[in-house]
Length: 603
Ligand code: C2E
Ligand code: CA
Image 1 (cartoon, protein in one colour):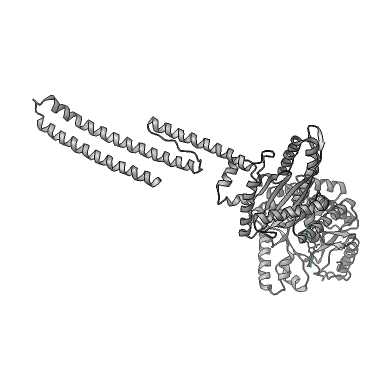
Image 2 (spheres, rainbow, N blue to C red):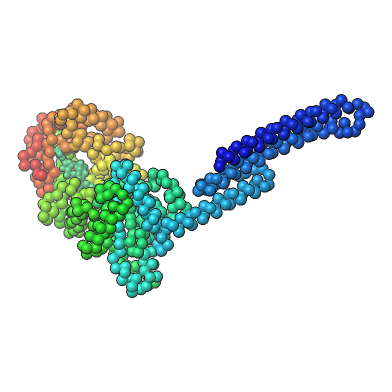
């Protein structure tokens, strides 16, 4: 069609060319003829023809120029109209030219914007659920299909949550469908609020939907987001993409159940419903729309069968994993509440120059009623994901501050280091909390050292900077933990007023292993970075004499590790300090390192 039009336009151009050439020839001939005739006695016709020649010529040029310009504008409008017809409603550039052309331009522009609106309305009718204003089943089908194929292509994972309301039939039967619809609407608002709104697609129906559907290839970035849809009746679906692990879906499910279980206020009447959720993960439980939806639906029936208001995975392995995490979380909540299962163990930091312990690190332990002493690695993740970390972390800081005071009362002026997690540091009032603990316990701020892992520092450097600045003014010191395994941004590091680098265990263990040469290079590089920042360095995880010699050789002044002492409970720490310091005094002035005292190896 475009070709045909192009051909006819160029045909017209050729015709115009012939006409123009003819006109020039005619005008020239008449001019020559007129010139021959023009004498003082020439007839007025010859004079008239002579004068008119250039005028005709100019008119012909103007006419041809304006025809070319009109045809150029018309061709732009034709293209714009074709674009609008194919669904591209990008703004039409202003057209110039004669009034008729301008009018045609604005008519096409109006038509395009009407089309855009109509299309948005059409998509809204086709893809938006009227009761809840959420994307409907059809939109969901398209998005899930796209999400699955993208997830498989990228080698990542996703999850589909099939949410079915418990007790909704009762609401409908007792209060009528209008009230039921209002509950559904409120459910959709609550679900929208608990999912990360900025990641949700299909929230603004119409244009967004139209764009998303017409773009069959799909905007890649859109697919990695979350989606909430209403399938019909009291069934909703939540699509999660880029899930790190299956338990991410369990966390979202728990939040959904909590939020739906709150009563709904409909015109002053309090109504309650629940939610049973089935979870299918992809590609694990299937790699196409039908299979995954069916798996999630079946898992939802498992949840209903398990007493409702709960969630179940399609995969039994994941159900077991979720149950294990659920029990761990409940136990941890109880431990935090009861305040008698959590304990701190302390591991000395040795000043290699003075040859004696000059600080201790507080390390959290959970004395589980059934499993015995649990290491932090086995429960900190759960504490972080279920939001317990701020409470847990505050407990640790307070307990460590009490220890500072106790140690001082026993004559040991030793700073105590505390590990701080992302969840804690993200609390807006973190600095205030620490400040009030210092005031409450009477611990000297300069005796408190906070250890921040690289990932904590880099997570939100501005917030970190804010807290550090306030607490440094009080005298609290800061260490960067696990240095050498993360990816610190040196520019951010420069900005932060830190005191100490703690070099990670894994780097120290390289020093006398198979890759000793490589280990020594990494260690030297870290030492050089620390030196240029003017920070102290602590080697963590020193286990052997050889590791100790190497770190000393490279100028590392502080060390911590099983070579000197394992982390130990409070009661052992006091004895250990007494024994060790007495031993050093007895050996002085030759002593340059502290020998591992027997009986200090408390696991
Ligand atoms: P971290 O901060 O790197 O602590 C050092 C870990 O290395 C401790 O493990 C310690 O027991 C262990 N360690 C010390 N010397 C040696 C050694 O010579 N060889 C080996 N193989 N390991 C050694 P732990 O106590 O299991 O703590 C593990 C991690 O849990 C800590 O690593 C820290 O990141 C975190 N953590 C511990 N307590 C707390 C806490 O109260 N709050 C927070 N947020 N995290 C904590
Ligand atoms: Ca640490």
